[in-house]
Image (cartoon, rainbow, N blue to C red):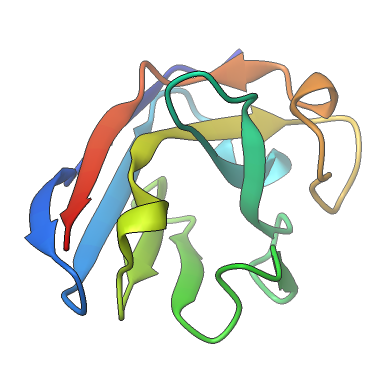
Length: 125
């Protein structure tokens, strides 16, 4: 089992940057593929980025490709999301998630077993 705690959200102007971090508890962090999702008011939770267990493979939603970068440090048990060139449409609560069934992460919330409490990101125009 793993517990996740996000940090790093906040208010930023369009074009700015934020770095989200997700700290995991437990000794088996390296056995989990990780993902970042987001949920805006009135919308469903959507995929943002995923990284496999080793950190050697990543994938992104088309809407953030080229602007966001996911990374992980298995020794520190953290996964990060560097967000650049932020847009107002990136405003949402961002969630960190973990799944232990497969080496690579998935694209749907139902594929993940553990979730953080979320961190708010607000991008002003």
